[in-house]
Image 1: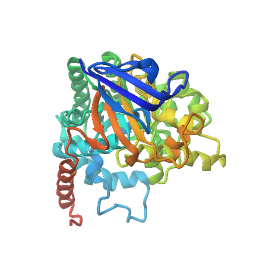
Image 2 (image 1 turned 90 degrees about the vertical axis):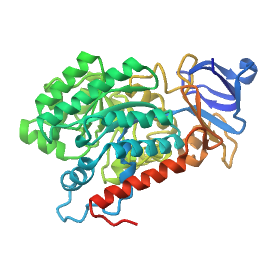
Image 3 (image 1 turned 90 degrees about the horizontal axis):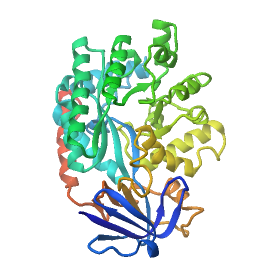
Image 4 (image 1 turned 30 degrees about the horizontal axis):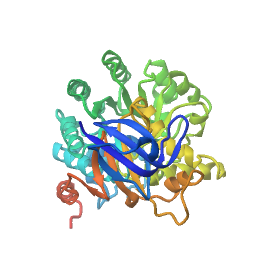
Length: 449
């Protein structure tokens, strides 16, 4: 039995009572939190490995609800695709992203891009991530490549493949089959990694394909997830084809359910969509930083006021979860001209327990409580003022950076200690990612070093 004792920390539990414990300890056996409380109550534990958290803030691991992890190989590419004067997001997707990147993804890129991105996520305090792998010409086997990377990094992950109908019916069937096989594989194997069914979005999938995805998910009793309303084009497309806005269209075809996660939702109908989301208990992954980079201005306040569960995601191109929290907070404060919306406590919850609810894993992760999985992050205290109950969450959300993540425990296993990975060669992974990225650049006749 593996035993671990984290002691002397300022523990932020994010539990139902929102406890903050000064001089606190967490005792872990194998992958489960067995005790949590003041050091004097938890005491010493014979044969336990000890992590001294003196001068550290101890928090639940962050939960990222949407990523395209392979995209580490296409960050900072030497060509943007933005030159065309008729630029719009959907035209950029069709002229640039799909043909030059997504359609050229191979198994090597899926594997090393995912692995490099996961190391960045862990350095940002993310212990659970949710991926939608892209690459319709990398079938079959795409999820096996992503899975291998997740296993090697020790990450807790929810993985899917992006089923799409934009290429052919045969390719769509391959994508759905990839998801089904992987879900069954994960259930047979057990462990930190699980599967969902991924599907692209309304404008690249037929009604019949979306209904088949929902039917398959129901038969497997599995979750499913999709991009939704990240761009205004979704409205134009469904109203042109069906005379309905996208959320109403999905409701009418029977696609909505509590097992569905919708990514982005930047351009929902604020009058009607929140009530529909709440009615079907649909979950939302809010990707504030990624959306802002692409000049989208999402508004989660109508959804949250309706009681819809909203978590945070990176979308893959970005990975700093402290920046994600701050961006989500700032864009809503600017929109409403109100410095009190999205308070620090709410942002921390969105990054932890609300994210766990999005994944329907709140009984396992998202807070530090007895009986939950031991996913724990230690943050260095670089604060210029003393940290205690009234201000520690402000420090986490408003001041912390990736450099402050000094320790990461996932499923009871020490992944990072004193700012260094325990069993991973970060430089080797980064060098391999460089090499793989340049291969793609050469294929597209882009500038190379």
